Amino acid sequence: MNKAELIEALAKETDMSKAAAGETDMSKAAAGRAVSALVDIITKTVAKKQDVQLIGFGTFKAAKRAARVGKNPRTGEKLKIAAATVPRFTAGAAFKAAVNKKK
Image (cartoon, rainbow, N blue to C red; front, side, top):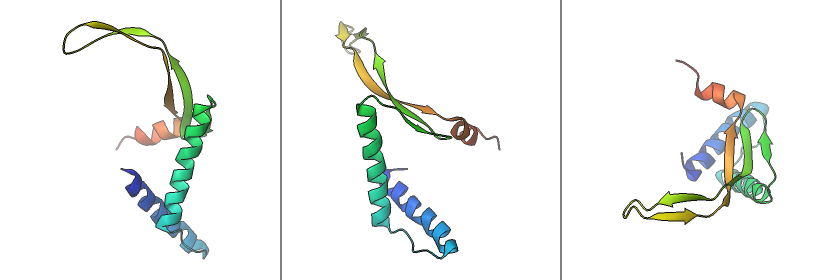
């Protein structure tokens, strides 16, 4: 699923729930703004080295990766790979259970 498909699914999902409640439907444009805002918030927060925890879904966090020695696959030459801070996602229990559900 790409971003456009996610936006379409979000608009469709909120249409169903809001129609039952008699409220107005969420447009694709509003769903797109919501998805973009969520991604921006998570990105900015993790860039500040703060965790974003969504109970049942998972946790986004910044993790340090140590410097290491790698190998150029073409030449076999060893090279140094610098230490870096990388984003990590750890799935929550409910998300893991939903994905691992046996049919």
